[in-house]
Image 1 (cartoon, rainbow, N blue to C red):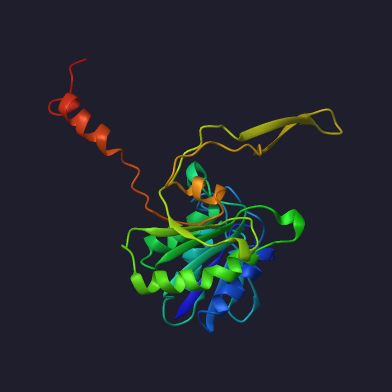
Image 2: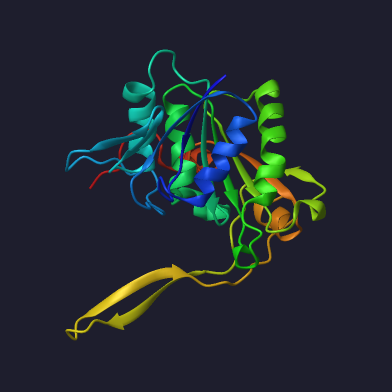
Length: 257
């Protein structure tokens, strides 16, 4: 199996090293194409207004000045020599990618770009607790087996798999739950106004560490309960119920001015 790795934390991120160790348990044919610098929150951004530079660090290891989406596209179409990869793994992200965050995540976007180009994509993220040096132990312990099993089972061509690992030691994690995407009942994104040394205001964007109260079966609840969350995602954002309602009320001839 040929595997392409990417992330949104950058080519030098510890999470990418963890992903390399995960991939090494699955294949000897592993390639890397990741952003030169951190591109967290880039979502599916594509670099259109400036050229993208590619740097080769070693055989099968590249960085680009672009986004995770750029990296996957260039990796699959330009940089991986010979046969197209069988799988793209994106991560391991420092911090979970859950609920509404998935629409902003560069990690998830890397897997989506793979899917759009006809290659199965899996996004991997590790919940916090890095302050006690637990790091990516949970991801490294369980991801190879989960990925191997997912590849055996398979999934639809227009779907990606979003894996999130709780911030607990591997010995305390006993369950994998297939979940649906949740939505927080608390708005955790925030901005902080500061002033630079020249007296000019600027803003620092971030997140408040505030938990919501998600229902059972969601990715958020699984992580809160110390479970590994596996969420099938797709990019069809159509709200089916509204489509049916609006067809009844708005369909047909356009209204007169």
